[in-house]
Image: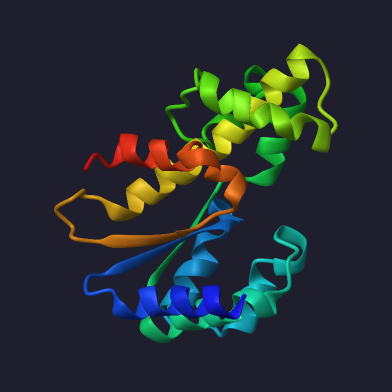
Length: 194
């Protein structure tokens, strides 16, 4: 854990251009708190309270504190990438078609649901998450893709105009969104070619 953290800190410290730090840990409704941390208006602990860290992410803040403190200290642009959890849960339970127009607007406008290879990879997670039946599996896949697409969309918006802004990004997301270079990476590449 310490070695990984050191590598992350080295990457963040060595960036020569404006660095955007995108995180899966929070959804886009927490962006104002991210802005305030980046602007050094609040401490990391105040930030954690504002975003309701324990409830929204759950993992101990101490694991993330050095990264968030580096963001604050260097004034890096922190981006809450994720889709709102309640919208994602609704998709997983009752499908994309069950969303209201305001709920649908909280997800990326473009959702590529035709991803057979990713769907095959995600079948391994069905048992872990207790997903049964074709409809449940379809909705689970749609929810996962909605998260990946929304994170890619929010990251791309933070890097616009691409590539003319010269901005670079570091993205923190779980392995489930990076399975065999599927999930999040191709959705970022689709929006940010090259």
